[in-house]
Length: 247
Image (cartoon, rainbow, N blue to C red; front, top):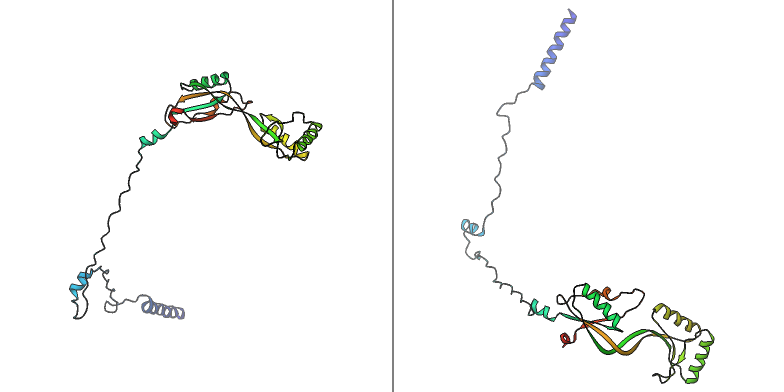
């Protein structure tokens, strides 16, 4: 009996707790209403603002602002020289040379024909590159030049001689070389003996051969490998406008 009473009291306590704290109903009058949603701000023109709020006396009215007038940009002027004029200025005929002899010129012509050109050969008087000339210049007197010649000869440089009637005078020639490295070695040998040598291009006058060729298009560049048939031999050639084209 005692246990039943205790259980009854516990059930009442639990029911009271549930009814007061968990199962609580809020009346419609006690609930807070939802906050009203404000409409988004609307962009108002100055003219609409002026109509809604007329200006007071003494207040300057709002006026429409007109942007300043801007002149359109001037069109770029076209270049005075046309494409056709530029092509007229380009070379249409090229001269290649000088060639020392007919076999060299004939070999060059064969290479041009193989490349699709129609070369023409002509001969004239001119200068040919002979090689790299090593010399000692600036000796004060002939006696000094002869003394330097004897010293160089006794040191094993046999191909040295005093040039007669040279300008400037008292010039010692130490050989003409087709290879620049050999010429530089000769300069180093002379420098080791206390003298200063120099290297210049050596040319000789005579009959030379030129080849004129009409280009396939104005300004065309010819392949120089056509004229270098022997890689062991140095061939110095020029490419310039034909005489008629230059005139």
